[in-house]
Image (cartoon, rainbow, N blue to C red; front, side):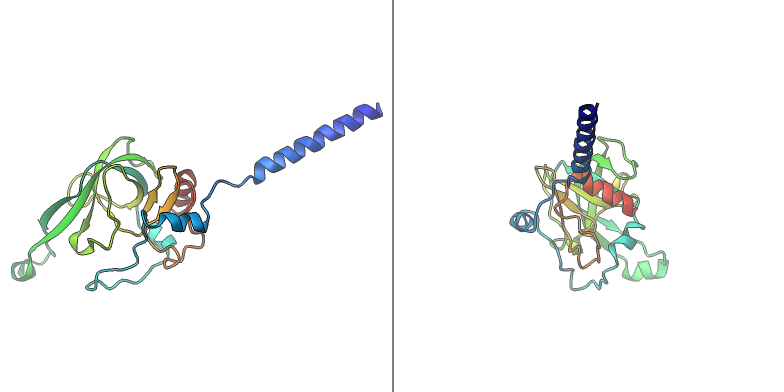
Length: 205
């Protein structure tokens, strides 16, 4: 009987140790050296156009203003277009109004944090030409997560910027396109897996 109790106690102990190990197992994450080695391919953009005054707002506050974080694959080359933007004042528009230039990338949605998109939905992501060179330069086949808010100038077109954009590497790790420290992120996400990134960004919404 004592032997049975001893064996039972050992089994319970082993099970407890096993569960402890499973629960405390850390998710894979790139270290600082690995992140730095990838930065030539996935750069951080820290500058803004000289004509634009910006003030870094805490990232958590910015997250409350967006609709969803979308994980997309870029499917085509950059495209350029112009659009007349009205300021809502006819007199001002007549005197000062002019066409503004923009650029956009076609993309397909893979997933998003708030489930506002259908998987496989085709969209475009766009930015003003004044930010060209100050925002991530994308190319066909690249995968990124970006902050999407409302439709822009066209149906299924969404504005994007470096803030809230994460490159997704070929092996599924996330690297920010913006300086996370500058935007007061208490828990930087560069180096985490895509799964962890989407979960954590979802919490911030």
